Image (tube, rainbow, N blue to C red; front, top):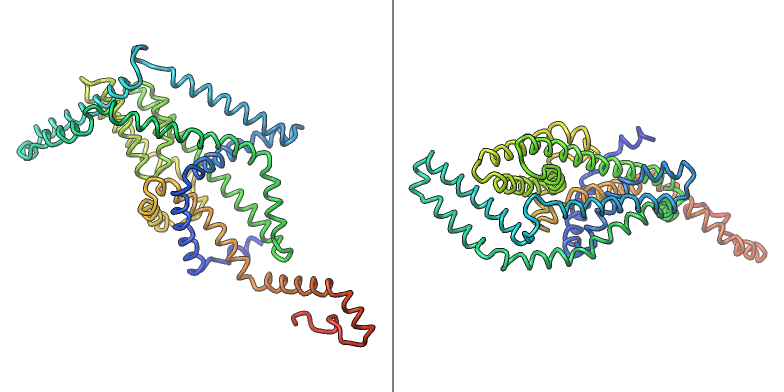
Amino acid sequence: MSMELDSERSGPIVWSGIIAATCLLLLVVKQLLWLALPFIFGTVLYYALLRPMQRMVRSGFSRNAAALWICTLFFGLATLAMVLALNWSDGPEEDSWEATIGLYLEGGVAFVRNTMTLLEAKFPILAEMRLTSTVNTAFAAYTNDFASNHLGEIVVGVVTWVPSLLLAPFLTFFLLRDGLRFKKFLARAVPNAYFERALFLLHEVDQTARRYFEGLLKLTVLDTVVLALGLWIIGVSSPLLLGLISAVLAWVPFVGSIAGCVLVVIVASTDAPATPLVAYGAIVVFVLVRLLDDFVFMPLTLGRSLHIHPLVTVIMIFVGGMLAGVVGLMLVLPILGVVMVIGETLGRLVTNPRLRARHRYAKALRVRQASIDLDIARERRGAPTASTKPLGK
């Protein structure tokens, strides 16, 4: 079976359909982002918690009880960790969140201004271009009264997303509890002639998705630990929290890594405003972690689980960003992976001549079985019956 599968490759027609379906789904997901993001987070958590739940089932628990205990324990610990992280503060307790955000923004702006001043001192042509004054004017136009003008809108936007993200725990629980039932439901819809092949491919899809999402979580843990260690060595505050946020942001290609680097630099420049070397050291640490991520961690974790050619990956990332912005950058690869598996599966099933022949034969047998009573009546009248005709007619 595996040799036969390896010998079948999807042609240009199948891949054209895969790319077209991916682009269409990106446009749909952009409009239904409130549902797509919780479903993606729920799927990631499902594969992360599936192995512990299976151990509980093998030890004697029912699927319902195991899913309930695993979800309760995980989300309880996650809520506790979030509360502790929100209550943890290195600054004065009387500072409000608005003042804290304003402080970090000022630290980031000061770092950029100091960097521009150093560049002008090194390169006189930049001083003649008045680079520092231009940058100061641009920052002043955006950062003046930032807290009063923009933070309210940001908070309202975050609050509107909270009910949607709360769907992720419910989706995770029901996927753990009823995932096997859903697979059986899909298997029953497959014609008998295609059943064995479709069942094998469904198993391969599930295993590939599990390896991909588990690898993504392992990659996130490795990035968090290494980045937190580097930030702790150079003296940046809250290194573990910064490492975790940056590792999660790195799920978004290009944009997420830049956003994580900017966040780390802002915190480092605010912690040590009189020592710009700390912020520069944070940039060096971040770049080194990205290099380790691309050349060491990613091959060890994600590898080539999706089996997508690098050229197709790069092109689809740009297409996703053009069609759906940051949302497309974040979701194009998971969507492409799912559509690719479905498209290749349908292509293999539909284009296999042996399976098509078996399916036609099974349909003919069902027609003959359904017409037995009519054949008996025709025999009594002496008319020709369906049993006397070839199956293909």
